[in-house]
Length: 159
Image 1 (tube, one colour):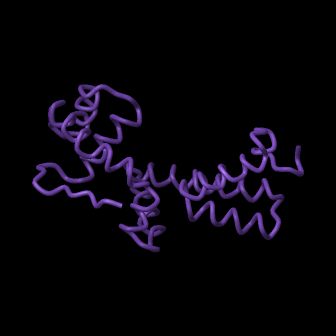
Image 2: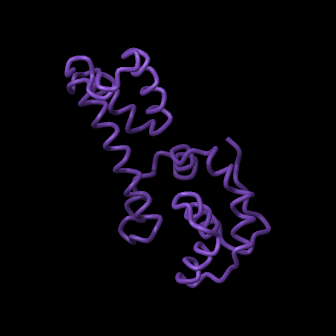
Image 3: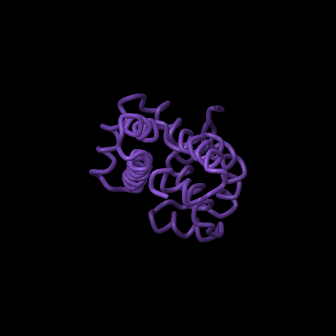
């Protein structure tokens, strides 16, 4: 994983991340992102945001959020996520959404295996592994089901 360097940038890394995330996540125009940042008191122009998206877009896409969080916070992610959620700015909302996605994916994997010991272990791996685990798990399960979407989503015993 390639480290992201924000050296020689006038704006803090959180502002750059937010602008790039807004641009790619909601397919906004550069001027829309400029306007949204201006509403938050951050004066920039669309050309600066364009440069950020060109420079950081691929790096952010390459570095999955799961691995970035583990690198930044280590195993102490929960206190930081709870602190951010208590403030309820955009990082807090993002952390809450991310934790909900991890929780739902873990519960789905455990439910798919009828909450057996293996299912609970796989559910825990889904929660801790995030998208990296989920992609591999779905690939293996869909190959085992030979492309049957009903069996892939519900499991063998529920079809």
